[in-house]
Image (cartoon, rainbow, N blue to C red; front, side, top):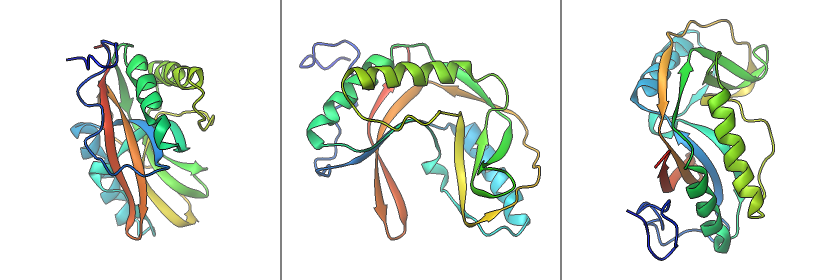
Length: 202
Protein backbone atom coordinates (compact mmCIF):
# COMPACT_ATOMS: atom_id res chain seq x y z
CA UNK A 1 0.00 0.00 0.00
CA UNK A 2 1.22 3.54 -0.69
CA UNK A 3 2.24 6.02 1.95
CA UNK A 4 -0.34 8.77 1.50
CA UNK A 5 1.96 11.41 2.97
CA UNK A 6 4.25 11.26 -0.06
CA UNK A 7 1.67 11.72 -2.78
CA UNK A 8 3.18 8.88 -4.86
CA UNK A 9 1.61 5.46 -5.38
CA UNK A 10 5.10 3.99 -5.80
CA UNK A 11 6.05 4.47 -2.16
CA UNK A 12 5.70 1.28 -0.13
CA UNK A 13 5.44 0.58 3.57
CA UNK A 14 9.10 -0.41 3.58
CA UNK A 15 9.78 3.33 3.92
CA UNK A 16 10.51 5.24 6.12
CA UNK A 17 13.16 2.93 7.60
CA UNK A 18 12.41 1.32 10.96
CA UNK A 19 15.83 2.23 12.39
CA UNK A 20 15.65 5.63 14.19
CA UNK A 21 19.42 5.76 14.77
CA UNK A 22 20.44 6.55 11.18
CA UNK A 23 23.84 8.23 11.22
CA UNK A 24 24.15 11.96 10.46
CA UNK A 25 26.17 11.09 7.35
CA UNK A 26 25.19 7.51 6.48
CA UNK A 27 27.18 5.62 3.85
CA UNK A 28 24.65 4.38 1.30
CA UNK A 29 24.31 2.20 -1.75
CA UNK A 30 21.42 0.85 -3.80
CA UNK A 31 21.47 -2.81 -4.70
CA UNK A 32 19.61 -5.98 -5.53
CA UNK A 33 19.90 -8.63 -2.82
CA UNK A 34 20.56 -12.09 -4.22
CA UNK A 35 18.04 -14.91 -3.91
CA UNK A 36 18.50 -18.39 -2.45
CA UNK A 37 19.65 -19.88 -5.75
CA UNK A 38 22.52 -17.40 -6.09
CA UNK A 39 23.44 -17.80 -2.42
CA UNK A 40 23.73 -21.54 -2.97
CA UNK A 41 25.97 -20.99 -5.97
CA UNK A 42 28.14 -18.61 -3.90
CA UNK A 43 28.53 -21.31 -1.24
CA UNK A 44 29.67 -23.74 -3.95
CA UNK A 45 32.19 -21.21 -5.30
CA UNK A 46 33.51 -20.52 -1.79
CA UNK A 47 34.12 -24.23 -1.20
CA UNK A 48 35.99 -24.53 -4.50
CA UNK A 49 38.13 -21.47 -3.77
CA UNK A 50 38.94 -22.62 -0.22
CA UNK A 51 40.08 -25.94 -1.65
CA UNK A 52 42.68 -24.03 -3.65
CA UNK A 53 44.21 -22.61 -0.48
CA UNK A 54 43.81 -18.97 -1.49
CA UNK A 55 44.06 -16.36 1.29
CA UNK A 56 40.60 -14.84 0.98
CA UNK A 57 38.01 -13.25 3.25
CA UNK A 58 34.54 -14.40 2.22
CA UNK A 59 31.30 -12.52 2.61
CA UNK A 60 28.43 -14.05 4.57
CA UNK A 61 25.52 -15.28 2.43
CA UNK A 62 23.19 -12.60 3.82
CA UNK A 63 25.58 -9.86 2.64
CA UNK A 64 25.59 -10.84 -1.02
CA UNK A 65 24.20 -8.28 -3.46
CA UNK A 66 24.73 -6.61 -6.81
CA UNK A 67 25.41 -2.89 -6.43
CA UNK A 68 23.46 -0.66 -8.80
CA UNK A 69 24.52 2.74 -7.45
CA UNK A 70 27.11 3.59 -4.80
CA UNK A 71 26.45 6.95 -3.14
CA UNK A 72 29.01 7.05 -0.35
CA UNK A 73 28.23 9.40 2.53
CA UNK A 74 24.95 11.27 2.23
CA UNK A 75 23.53 13.95 4.49
CA UNK A 76 20.77 12.47 6.61
CA UNK A 77 18.37 15.14 5.40
CA UNK A 78 18.79 13.93 1.82
CA UNK A 79 18.11 10.26 2.44
CA UNK A 80 14.41 10.73 1.69
CA UNK A 81 15.31 12.16 -1.73
CA UNK A 82 17.34 9.03 -2.40
CA UNK A 83 14.34 6.94 -1.39
CA UNK A 84 12.13 8.88 -3.80
CA UNK A 85 14.56 8.13 -6.62
CA UNK A 86 14.42 4.44 -5.72
CA UNK A 87 10.63 4.48 -5.71
CA UNK A 88 10.39 6.02 -9.17
CA UNK A 89 13.13 3.82 -10.62
CA UNK A 90 11.33 0.72 -9.33
CA UNK A 91 8.50 1.33 -11.81
CA UNK A 92 10.52 -0.55 -14.43
CA UNK A 93 9.86 -4.22 -15.10
CA UNK A 94 11.59 -7.00 -13.12
CA UNK A 95 14.27 -8.94 -14.97
CA UNK A 96 16.41 -12.06 -14.85
CA UNK A 97 20.18 -12.56 -14.90
CA UNK A 98 22.01 -15.82 -15.53
CA UNK A 99 24.92 -16.10 -13.10
CA UNK A 100 27.48 -18.36 -14.74
CA UNK A 101 31.04 -17.29 -14.01
CA UNK A 102 33.60 -16.35 -11.37
CA UNK A 103 35.84 -13.36 -12.06
CA UNK A 104 38.22 -10.98 -10.35
CA UNK A 105 38.93 -7.25 -10.12
CA UNK A 106 41.06 -5.54 -11.29
CA UNK A 107 42.05 -8.62 -13.30
CA UNK A 108 41.99 -12.38 -12.92
CA UNK A 109 45.80 -12.40 -12.88
CA UNK A 110 45.97 -10.01 -9.89
CA UNK A 111 42.58 -10.19 -8.22
CA UNK A 112 41.78 -8.36 -4.99
CA UNK A 113 38.03 -8.82 -5.38
CA UNK A 114 36.40 -12.10 -6.44
CA UNK A 115 32.86 -12.19 -7.74
CA UNK A 116 30.06 -14.18 -9.32
CA UNK A 117 28.76 -12.61 -12.50
CA UNK A 118 26.69 -12.82 -15.64
CA UNK A 119 28.75 -13.72 -18.68
CA UNK A 120 25.84 -13.43 -21.10
CA UNK A 121 22.90 -11.08 -21.60
CA UNK A 122 23.04 -8.21 -19.12
CA UNK A 123 21.13 -5.46 -20.98
CA UNK A 124 18.17 -5.49 -18.53
CA UNK A 125 20.52 -4.93 -15.59
CA UNK A 126 22.31 -2.09 -17.35
CA UNK A 127 18.99 -0.49 -18.29
CA UNK A 128 17.80 -0.68 -14.69
CA UNK A 129 21.04 0.89 -13.47
CA UNK A 130 20.77 3.66 -16.07
CA UNK A 131 17.21 4.51 -15.02
CA UNK A 132 18.08 4.51 -11.33
CA UNK A 133 21.13 6.71 -11.77
CA UNK A 134 19.21 9.17 -13.94
CA UNK A 135 16.62 9.51 -11.16
CA UNK A 136 19.38 10.16 -8.62
CA UNK A 137 21.06 12.77 -10.82
CA UNK A 138 17.72 14.50 -11.38
CA UNK A 139 17.59 15.05 -7.62
CA UNK A 140 21.16 16.26 -7.37
CA UNK A 141 22.38 13.15 -5.56
CA UNK A 142 26.11 12.54 -6.07
CA UNK A 143 27.12 8.99 -6.95
CA UNK A 144 30.02 6.91 -8.15
CA UNK A 145 29.89 7.00 -11.96
CA UNK A 146 31.92 3.82 -12.37
CA UNK A 147 30.43 1.45 -14.93
CA UNK A 148 28.03 -0.99 -13.33
CA UNK A 149 28.80 -4.61 -14.16
CA UNK A 150 26.32 -7.27 -13.03
CA UNK A 151 28.36 -9.01 -10.36
CA UNK A 152 28.11 -10.19 -6.76
CA UNK A 153 31.27 -9.81 -4.67
CA UNK A 154 31.90 -13.03 -2.74
CA UNK A 155 35.45 -12.55 -1.38
CA UNK A 156 38.36 -10.14 -0.99
CA UNK A 157 42.10 -10.73 -0.81
CA UNK A 158 44.64 -8.68 1.16
CA UNK A 159 47.25 -9.47 -1.46
CA UNK A 160 46.45 -10.02 -5.15
CA UNK A 161 45.78 -13.62 -6.13
CA UNK A 162 45.81 -15.33 -9.49
CA UNK A 163 42.39 -16.73 -10.31
CA UNK A 164 42.50 -19.87 -12.40
CA UNK A 165 39.35 -20.80 -14.35
CA UNK A 166 36.55 -22.06 -12.13
CA UNK A 167 33.49 -23.87 -13.48
CA UNK A 168 30.16 -22.48 -12.31
CA UNK A 169 26.86 -24.18 -13.05
CA UNK A 170 24.57 -21.48 -14.48
CA UNK A 171 21.75 -20.30 -12.24
CA UNK A 172 18.91 -17.93 -13.14
CA UNK A 173 18.50 -14.99 -10.75
CA UNK A 174 15.07 -13.40 -10.76
CA UNK A 175 15.68 -9.76 -9.77
CA UNK A 176 12.37 -8.54 -8.37
CA UNK A 177 13.24 -5.63 -6.09
CA UNK A 178 15.84 -3.01 -5.27
CA UNK A 179 16.98 -1.92 -1.82
CA UNK A 180 18.51 1.15 -0.22
CA UNK A 181 21.24 -0.01 2.14
CA UNK A 182 23.38 1.65 4.80
CA UNK A 183 26.93 0.33 5.19
CA UNK A 184 28.63 0.68 8.57
CA UNK A 185 32.29 -0.20 9.02
CA UNK A 186 33.00 -2.25 12.15
CA UNK A 187 36.15 -3.91 13.46
CA UNK A 188 34.70 -7.23 12.32
CA UNK A 189 33.90 -5.93 8.83
CA UNK A 190 31.02 -4.17 7.11
CA UNK A 191 27.48 -4.31 8.46
CA UNK A 192 24.63 -3.77 6.00
CA UNK A 193 21.26 -2.39 7.10
CA UNK A 194 18.40 -2.30 4.62
CA UNK A 195 16.59 1.04 4.95
CA UNK A 196 13.94 0.42 2.30
CA UNK A 197 12.85 -2.04 -0.38
CA UNK A 198 10.90 -1.41 -3.59
CA UNK A 199 9.31 -4.09 -5.72
CA UNK A 200 10.12 -3.73 -9.42
CA UNK A 201 7.15 -3.11 -11.68
CA UNK A 202 4.73 -2.48 -8.81
